[in-house]
Length: 271
Image 1: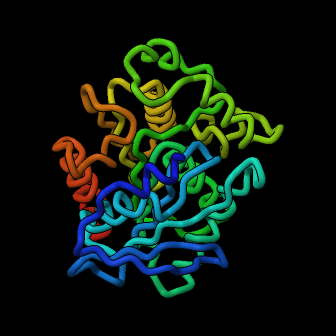
Image 2 (image 1 turned 180 degrees about the vertical axis):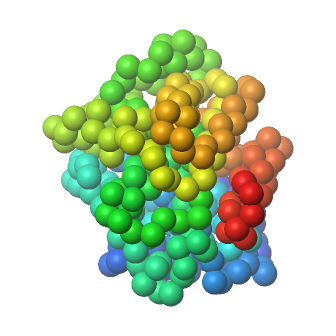
């Protein structure tokens, strides 16, 4: 049902989508007119680690890549419960390494993700650093699910305002994904990770999300570790409002702002 809903999202006619693979994993290559092909955005979709696919998120992934001025790759990472933690992290790391193997310079690659994919983006940066791999230029996290412990205050304080997510549903998905692993593991809940040395990061989150606390905690962790992170809280915006950019001006504006951040990082400028 979730995949069918996403598949019904309108997509701009000037975008090109081509099936691809990264590290043996299915991926969707996205291209907009005039996009630079010596740089790329690697997109990690949402879906609480148990649903979603690049096809359903193709419009969002492609529009973010367009805004950044580059080609895009949406990775079809493995999902739980069949493939529990840390399969998604392992796949994201492998996908990034595959882009470097194609000849893309690390400074010409950016990561982006929404919801679970946003938390996965942060976890991937940590995993890449811990492996001693060269890091991407920057990362975007949209409404990231970065705390799987279920203890964030906003799960309660924003429950009446959030039109899409519930703490109960997130708890069920977290159990499927963790498969017995600790919810406080730094690669499952990157709010508990050491963020030292990570590249510039941007978080965009809506003020009516139960996941607002995840973004606040991740930003606090970045401040603790002197990691460059910009936090934007968009008033009255729901979870991943960017996906509705075709009808929501705030969604289009958020994508444009995120694109400016990413393109600035790719060009080596201040972000």
